Image (tube, rainbow, N blue to C red; front, top):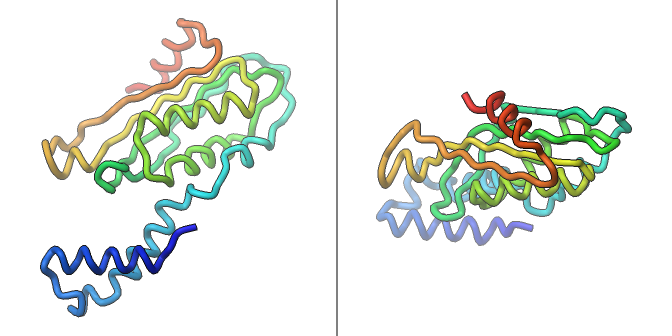
Length: 183
């Protein structure tokens, strides 16, 4: 559970370290606002992807299921800055499927933590594979990192692509998924 008091103290110290007046009208309530914002943007802690992924339905189909353009926003653990983008989850069922909203909920659970895009992609893939006992799972993530676009090298519009695979996804199916997802 987050300690909002510690967050507020840390934000106050940061504002003072920058050289700002913490008592200035626009900054008086900033520590509280930031603590509430962190509670929301880092709400994935304490949540378990096994819960939404446990709601499954029998399905005789062994054909590919693909949900794409699942938007996310996350927080880079290196700079505490946002990164955001889209995720696609493809899986080959092994007798059961999950409600589509549960895939999006799984993305949210892992995105709402301090993250690396590579780790988040892998965590989502592993959770879907393990919980659905799928024959194969492929997760493709495209992200834009503000730690790279608004500071440092400042290359706005630069995207990072990551993907993770579990189980058996034939090469022709991998290529199909990538063709459907990557524009």
